Length: 337
Ligand code: PEP
Ligand code: MN
Image: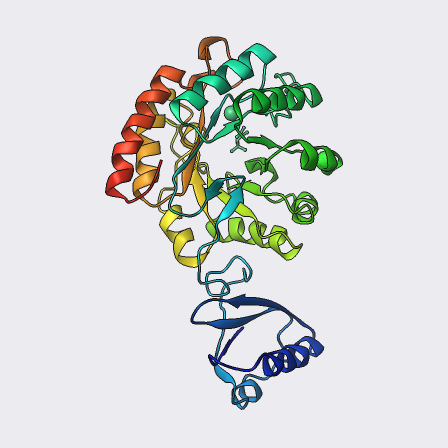
């Protein structure tokens, strides 16, 4: 439920109404813009009487919110959320590019790739230190050492780092070391982890689970937001369908759908969506055109020898061609790459 206050309502009157609603057991999510003052009600609204609210002369109208996600709902927050990391912003007019290898393999590898992608124009460096692998016998990532190597790459290039957390036990270290904490597809519904990162105050990149609906993705964001963290960036990374030619099926329509129902920024991962390096460019271009706020792409200096996901990684030279094309497309879409 959303209470729309009349413009010019004295602050004391709004506060009085807020106290009354809170006493009925709801939490209030307030949103103030140039032309609106909204009180979004979260929690059990069964005791709130709509007609009593409408009897208050400072109330313009009361809107029922059908969707189960509230804080992530555009009705609660009509302006798009912009997540700021240093001078970079995700969710504004910029189309941001996060690039880097699937996993951190060595100092030489991560620093080398970071320097190349920085030169070409990426705005963030990605690289997994803790890897969620399907097989326990596959490379599991360098762990803490991988985080240290990412920090060296950041220090040498200035690129903020994005990396995946798998266990809440590592959260304190991630808060200190990482610029954006990634929640991977396999952990999208790890609710304890979502609550923990919700208390962190750090920007969170939340990837869509491979079998999750858009609503489930938004409910996962709601977990993070309801714990107090509104710095959430969503990521469409393909879902599992009957199609076998690609690793997953990129759900491009998820982008405009999310933009319609939520104020949160949303990016696309064409690498994990397709699983094939030659599909990265067409899908990345499509992502820009359907309105995504950016992409996350796997780039590797030597994909044939990559310890993880070499088949879907592009080399720096191809990454440059992709960036050139995205810059051209961005002009048409009024975005800055
Ligand atoms: C990744 O980005 O490294 C990753 C493992 O992706 P996903 O969680 O989407 O499979
Ligand atoms: Mn990968």
